[in-house]
Length: 131
Image (tube, rainbow, N blue to C red; front, side, top):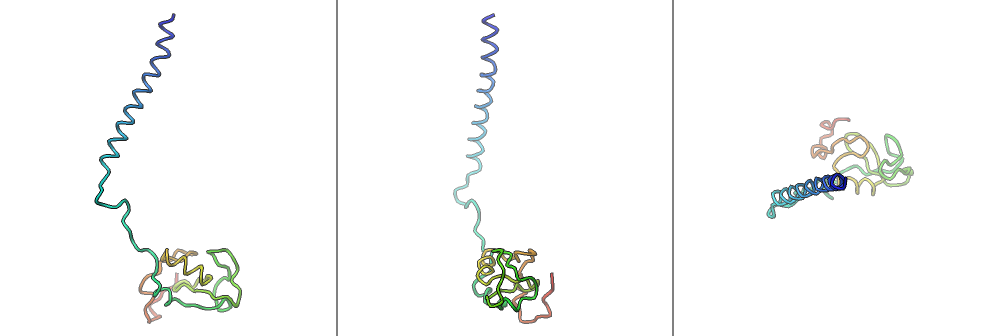
């Protein structure tokens, strides 16, 4: 009777301990195999627009916006006298500061996700397509 109670308690504990040891060995092996100290963990890449590209974008006032007068970045209304930025191609408008902060990190329209390509900064407006 005591032997069966001992076996009933010992075997599950021994099995879980063996699984834990195997898990820790696999974890250590994968951690050592994946480390390359010469390469960075995530390569740095510039994603947003530069300050000179931001200056090339159309800066208007709230009354000049073609589409909606709500800023999709801060979710506030763009007043008629507030400066706004219009994204080329899709003509979506945002507060000037909101748009510059967004576009300096992400080269896409925050509303429709249209990519702001370098060709949109050309002086020839016939090459610009609508989204």
